[in-house]
Length: 95
Image 1 (tube, one colour):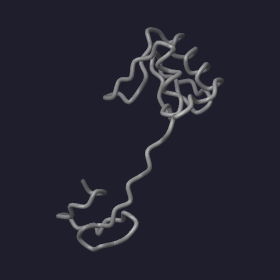
Image 2 (spheres, one colour):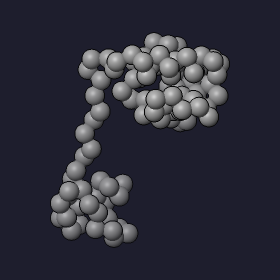
Image 3 (cartoon, one colour):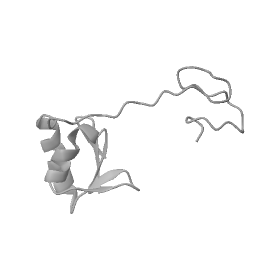
Image 4 (tube, one colour):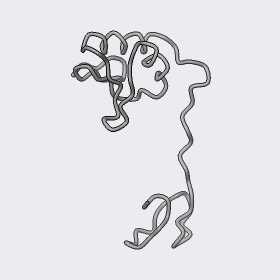
């Protein structure tokens, strides 16, 4: 495993906090594998080159990270998205 500016290269896969640089990783020939939660490349060298290029270039305009949902627990009304902890709770944090 090699770490390049917050991204980790495992063989031909790039993992880590890739969301802000996803456009650069895609442009470098990467394919997102949702099950592995990694960008997959044709070779380990291509993965390392793509990670280096993505870290060195600024994020693409419009790159954003969705806000975390903060709903109250439906069972207890606890604010801030905290769960009541009951085994039959159906709040968003338990689902």
